[in-house]
Image (cartoon, rainbow, N blue to C red):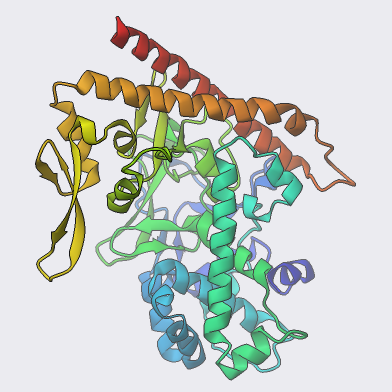
Length: 463
C-alpha cells in the first residue's frame, strides 16, 4: 500500500508544499526553509538558511507546537477522538503503550486513511495524514534483497539485520493476530484478496520512524515535523541542536559558535559516537568523513565445555558481547560479559540458590564469598583481586580470538562480495553495494587496529 501510494502520488507531496502545511499547523520557521540543496538533490530535503544566521542570536530557527510532535502522548490523544484507532491500540496491548508500537501503528492507520481504495472510510484524519506524504523513502538495509544482504557477511550488520527482520515479522504477525478480531481490520487490512496491508507496509512504517525519530526532553522518542528534516553531521560539523522550550514546544537552535550564510545547510547530529554499522542500519547511510567504523559490537559466547555456562547465562544482565571503540591513536573495548567467560569456580566464582523476600527462589552469584547484586559489578571485584593481571590477560586473549574470527570471515567473503554482479539486470543495486563494501572496509580497519593493540597489551603483560 505505502510503496504503491508513493508511486501513484496519493501518498507523496512535493517538498515546497511543506511550507504551507507548516504555517497551517503553527510551525514557525525563522530564517530557514526546508528545501533540497543545488547539487545535492539526491539527498532529499534539508534545513537551509534563508538569511545570514549568527551565533543563535535569532532565537529558535524552527518552533513546533507540542501538539504537532508525533509522540506516544499525541498518539494517545488522537485515540480519544478516533475510536476505531483506539480499538486497534487497545488490541495490541503493551506494544501499543510503547512509543514505537503506538507511532508505527498510527502511521499505518493514517496511510490507510489516505488510500483511495479505502471505501469504508474508517478512521479520523489528522495533520500527520499529510505530513507522512512529505517523508522521503529511505533505503534502509531492511529493504535490501537477499543478494545485497549477502554482501554484508562478515560485518556486524549482517546478524543485526537478520535479527531486525525477524523482529519486524514478529511485530507484524502480532499486529495482525491482535486486530483480526476487529471486523473492519479483518475486511480492510487483512482480507486475503483485497486487504490493504502487507509486511512491506510495516517495514515502511519502521523506516519512517527509525530514520527520523529524535529523543526530546520531556517528550521521549518522537517524530518532529520539519526539525526531523535536518540532516546529520557529527563533531565540529554539527550546526544546531534540538530541545524543548519552557512551554514544551520542540525547537531547533543554532549553536552559539556557529554562523551560516544564505543557502548553507543547517545540520544536527544523530549521535556523534554512532558507528558505521548503526548509521547504515538506522539511517541508511555512512558519513563521508568516517575513516574507520568508529565503534562496533561483536557477540561473545561462553564455551560449551564451561560447567557453569547455564548458571552464568541465567544470571547475566550484560549484553553478550564486546564493544570496540576507535579513539584515534588507539582503540579500547568494553564488556561486562567477557568476565563471565574468564573466571570460574576454581578462581572464586560461586552460584547458589537463595530465597527472595516474596518466597521465590533465585540464583545468586558471588565472588570470593561476597555476593554480587549485578553481573556488571563483577569486573570491579576482579580489579582489586590479586589475580587481576591474569584475569585481564584472559579477557584480552578472548577478545583477540573473537576479532581474529571476524577478520577471517571478512577475508573469506571479500572476493565474492567485491566481484558480485551488480547494476541493471541483477538483484544488487549500486547504492547497497557501495554501502556494504564501505562498511566492510571500515570495520576491517577497526578490527585490525584493535587486534594489533591487543597483541601489544598481551605482549607487555607477559614480559
